[in-house]
Length: 486
Image (cartoon, rainbow, N blue to C red; front, side, top):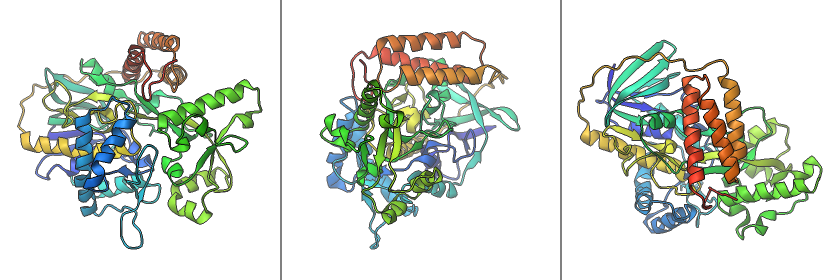
């Protein structure tokens, strides 16, 4: 089976790339489960855009400030300038953004932004609304329940992918391959990601001697409701704090101002570390368990406003028995986003490859540096999906490939589930919000042991990705942005 373009992933990056590829191209989109099992679908806050031409310099500066000096300035400038073009296109596609009674776009503010410049849809259901809207406009073929197990690479050419479906194993060939597979959430005990987001494609990049960049830069969202049995925890959008919610201790103290003058609206890495540190200090006092909790105080909202502006969060929290917005909600930081990823150039092409692209969270464009500015992630996915698609249109050529043998490898073995749980615990305890050299070395040792075990291919790929994260964290000895060492 031969295609012009194969896209791995059906989140906002993969879908928008497909929508920018013309109907005359033969395009196949692959997703591991159902298309809505992606991080886009669970995204709440919105899309950061330059509000107008005058806002571009400020948006650029806010992004650079959050990135703590590690951003690629040229790429950040591209992101902000092309945000206006992408916004125009989304509006032309009748994307259901929230508007006021006069039809004007509503903008909200999140941490580290100098102004309110984040557009949203469905209140706090931005990802779900945009994902549903984009998928309804799709005019290319999408395969569900299709797990990519191998990249078919020869020299500097990606000839296609091996894929496992309910109908069997296939080698699929393509003139161009776009990876839009998301981040690494399943490597951690507490995370906000869809369960399909496991870092396996990153492992395939490594086994083909291609580069990952900045993998030590992992963002932990400060406000997550973790009192659930599911691996994916309930994100409580930063837009809540942008609109007035407060972070308090058991006694109602807004302790974050002791750590940063911006309090709840300090950059995410600072807020997450501050909560982590404050909670440790409370535990050292041998207080009762509930007195060591940190809470999100929603009392500044009226009930009417809260249920209208944040309907999804309200529905989810109400299902756990909370009286909103009167009850304080216990929160904890949890893994949220990977700033690093597959090393790509300014059009999303994987370094040293001529027809392999990576876009969205799986890629590292250099936009986010050491810490992602809130709501820049969906924007990055859109901007670089369009760039990659345009490059493919301009340079699409028919490639001749040899047929690859079909490798029928054992994807999962009996002990893999137990080892995955051990890996998640190691990554959370040793490679989390605050890191120590000794802990990182212990994590690396544990990963080496598991790699030598009798394991299935998918776990091996996760372990390769985890190993790269730990090695990157060991190599960067100074604290910067989201990477914090003591």
